[in-house]
Amino acid sequence: AGMGIGRAVALTLAEAGYDVTVHCNGSVERAQAVRQEIQAMGRRCEIVRADLSRPEEAAALFERHEALFGRLDAFVANAGLTVKGRFEEMRPEEIDRVFSVNFRGTYLCIQKAAALMKKCGARGSIVVISSNHYRMHHPLCSVYASLKAGLNKMAEHAALEYGKYGIRVNVIAPGVIDTDMMAGFTAEDRAALAEETPVERLGEPDEIARTMVFLADEASGYITGQVLGVNGGLVI
Image 1 (spheres, helix red, strand yellow):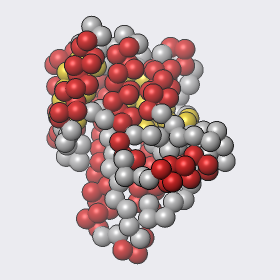
Image 2: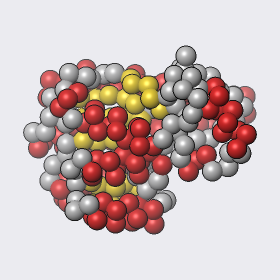
Image 3: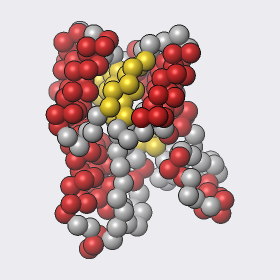
């Protein structure tokens, strides 16, 4: 949660009254900056570093959170990475690298988040950040897109099993969001992406974050197992 969508979600949840654990792996300095912003709001914020490709570190993330806060009401599974390449050229180690974070890491985090929610009696909300790639087909993204589609199915199964505990599991599938990951895009590239989108603009991280806050709130208490596309109509 040190940058991009994760940062926006952390800050917006803090604005909504949540204390927040900010997870990071490589972006420690950015996570520290987010913590400072949240603490300036008068909310509590702690940083926990973990490599989610390692199951033991994924487990330790939630153990540390429980030790710090004692309970969990909302969890956002936002960690992910992209390795692009032609289908015929993707190497096993590249496939495994993306799988270990984007799919297995998310699966294990949902397990741990739900277990902690059950333990503390929270009627919690788990939100997985997927992608418009689950419906669209972009060159060089076969592994990334396939795993994002898998996340949607994973969330449906989790929603099915955890609903009886009052734990809801949903997916936000963003479109093209104007984050740090677009730093290398030219003005022409950005204009072309906006032109492809019915609303004729890129999305903002805050728009994903506000959707997350809605899904965390009891206002969405009858919504679970759903994939909510926040994409400006791009997939149509």
